[in-house]
Length: 147
Image (cartoon, rainbow, N blue to C red; front, top):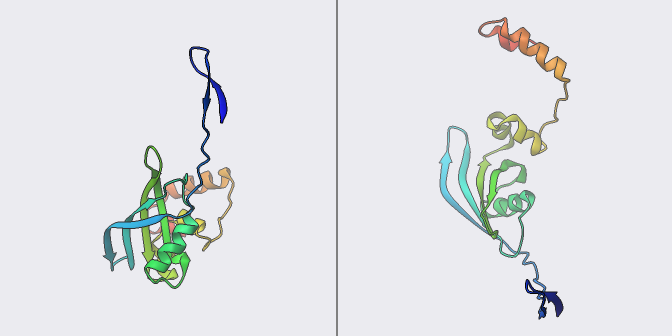
């Protein structure tokens, strides 16, 4: 019990209840679609996590790999998660690629880097701007040959 002063100045007691954080979470997929052209399965992922602030993507990746019989966890890409107001539920987007090569080919560069399949190339701002200005002067396939 804890002593608390209410808005009128009177002291009252409140019972403090410690909530145990529930470590389990439930995954549900919606709008599941097999995309053969991009060699992947794509879906909206609903995560129910009552008593928890959020669920790490690494944990979600492991559970999805087990659910959909994926050989390598790196083939699962999760992004765009938003926690519903009030907590307890998050919704995001998920992609399961058939293999690592397809993921490297079709996935945006920043997500491939986050997955740890590629090293981030560090360039200075000046180098990036100089390259951009050199490319502006060229047309067609010559743009791809610059640096």
